[in-house]
Image (tube, rainbow, N blue to C red; front, side, top):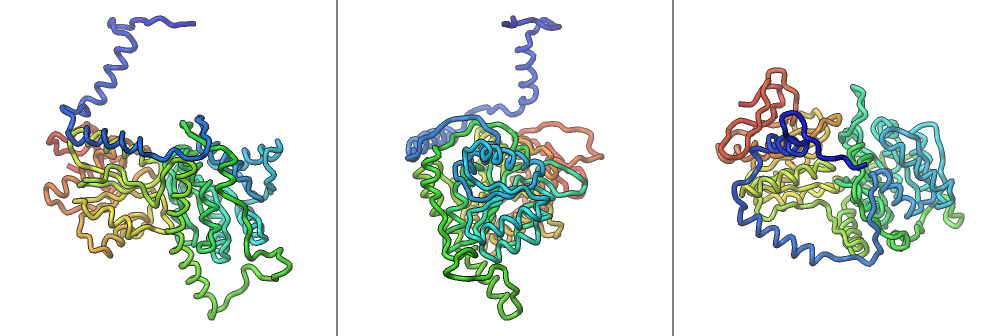
Length: 479
């Protein structure tokens, strides 16, 4: 039944009230004039879109959650074995894949196990036997796999783990941050992160091509943010199954346990004379992975029409101030970049897609023209020298000889919201470092609740000195 436009108290319609509320929230965010750069950027964007590769695959537009998208990618790849144990927010993946199997849509062997430790053990056994294997987990599930993660990497097994990022306890929390995957960053696994559901879908399709390359042969974590990406529904463009399977190809390992013509051992005891050589071999595979990832991305672009790399640069052509970030929060940051560009402020963003191998040299090259940089971590390391992304990128910039003010921030821990406004104020913070010659305060918490702060006024960039959010890492209000 159609609902007529009804007036509410005061003689205003519901639409008028909604518009008034939006104006109140955005009263200081409307640009006075459009900057010449913004118009120039719009024209360049049109040209870039026109020049995009269309891709050879047939495409289908749909709406899916991140878990649905990755489950579809698993179905299209049709791996041999999937052991899994459910844990929020990755539970839907084994649920959906087992449904595909029971419906006869794929012939993957699903192994229900009693724990995450067992699921990784079974995946290792299947991969060592010559099967294309995967599993999925989150948070404490990954922690329970800890021992097995190192075994998979040292055995050079090309299996894939779908990691739906969720904070590690405690206190108990089921929402997103990167403490689980960042805790395993030195286990020898490749790590790739997604901003959107579509990117998570693409990352899984590309994963086996990277891990199974003879110059790599290392396991990979395909990471995406719990609930934010895994459960939220977005528009997505999938590609046809035939194109996916042609791209991924068949897995034909040179060495595997069931090869009767070449008996071998997997995971043997390695005393002092051999252990270091094993680590050196893993390091070589990790180093080789950079080129392989770029090659696979270039080939996938020809199929899908979508371009990927080690990281994404967003409006960095002439950026003076840049945010470096990972995962779904790149979306809010892009919105903040676009808004500030309307004011003629030259800001940009880099979204790190591949964390292992870490593209330190490449990131330093991309940031060398900036006047100040903010690095945002969604995981604490308690090192006193920054978060995982912050400490590694600052080290890379130092090695590259860059003398640029850099501030490391922490955001979104335990699923705390990260907003466009907060991204905007991070830009303001690093801009003020340059404008006023301020000594940068490190390790600030974005959006931290401050018991001493009672007001939360919104300020724009028109000369206002106060900050919109409390950024202080020690709980003090910034004035």
